[in-house]
Amino acid sequence: MSASRRPDRRPPDISQWLNHAFRTDSADRPAAEAAIAGLYALLGKPPPRFVWVRSPNAAVPPPSSSPEPVEARLATRVAVLRRRCGDVSPEARRSVKESVARLIRLAIPHSLGLHWYGQQDAYWVPPDPDDPELTLWATLVRSCGWWWPRDGVCVIAERPLAIHTDEEGRLHSATGPAVVYPDGWGVHVWHGTRVPSWVVEDPTAARINQEYNVEIRRCAVEHLGWPAYIEQSGLRVLSRAPDPGNPGCELQLYDLPPQKWHAPSRLLLAVNGSVERDGTRRRYGLRVPAGFDHPLDAAGWSYGLTGAQYARLRRRT
Image 1 (cartoon, one colour):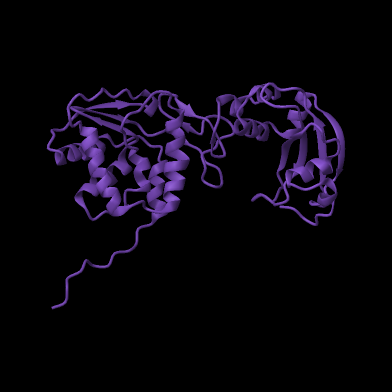
Image 2: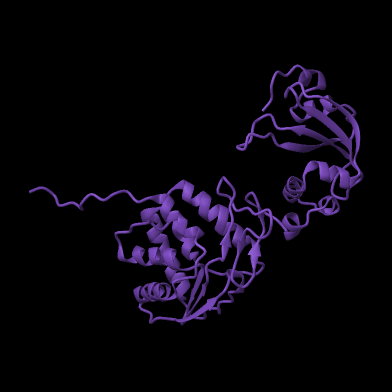
């Protein structure tokens, strides 16, 4: 007798499943509460009292005082499930866990304690589970935002009102928060980098020059644009030269005023050798030691070359 086997099923559409992580409609509260009550039942616990909040930032779950709190027991069960099924795909982890959930969590100033991501658990919850426990988790992916199970009570956050991404699927907005929740709380992100609100809403050279974080400065300059940054900063061009590694483009070397966070330096403005998706080439600036007076020497230094060696380059990327 041949062994019985499950009927063949169509492979799930991962992209459609991951869309749940970016949903911005209101939570399905009855479905979410029923799924969480089912998880509590697996622990031998009655349904908790449910407290809904309008953003993860507004969640203040009570501390658990029992020797084996619900959240710890649930985490143990999740660890078993995760070992069994792993992540949906590496792409899912990058696009949901690392690029969305992580940035939201970093923006919350207070401790969150043990929690789960609801819709953003799509990166590890399979889209078409064949297991009753995983089915409860899949229901939560479809139904709500982040949630905090505790003894006798569970705090659940609504889904965002808006989630904005760039062409590569990274959180991004050039006009306001990339993620906005119903209570008005949001997270400002520039092409996948979490930034203060001023970088998106009011970048200025003065603020950029006072910022010590290199990545935040880079994002702010990208948004403001190099011509505006140079004009607002009153930078003086020291010298310019054709870029031998990038025909048709020019290297420009500027003097930089003393800045609190840096040793004396100068700014080399260049054009990227590779083409962006929209067909343009991005301008970028590099800080170089203050001793350079010629842009070829500064450009060569950035590649570990002398100016004379850089001048012989045919093409750079």
